[in-house]
Image (cartoon, rainbow, N blue to C red; front, top):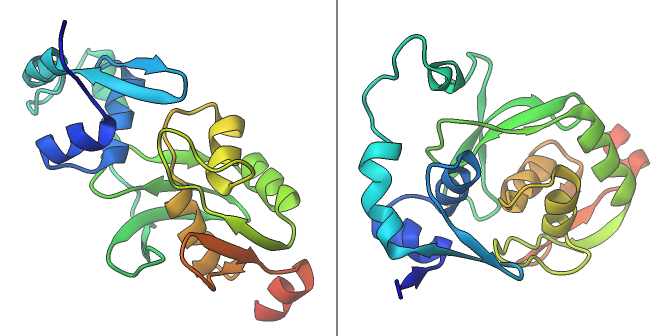
Length: 189
């Protein structure tokens, strides 16, 4: 029986960010299994990565050649809540946004309808960020994102940082953000 790795262990072994591993899984470039809310990667799958993730250009007529996205020129850098890293963003909370966590080549897309639903759901008050990939805290921003976007990834830490950057929320303690009222948000703009 093969040995299994968590997304975090896989990311550490490959020296990349965890969201990149989860994106590879979603794209079908890295096979994984789900046991409850846990994702596990069979160790032999890592040996296939040189083929499934070849760095050479895709042939022009390949469907993958259309999937390679470079961030538009209008992206900006936003600092994470800890300030230890930055990520690229195009758009905004109000208009819908695309977020490139870490060194990811592909954005995570948050349509305007999703952002509107997020703001309506978390209208005011403190909420857990819920940044765990395998099981975000119940009622957290991470759980909301995974349920509404039907994604295995959990970009809650990036969405939380964008909410703070744009004045929709602020951080008073580790692992939580506090949403501002609509009146406070309007006053800050």
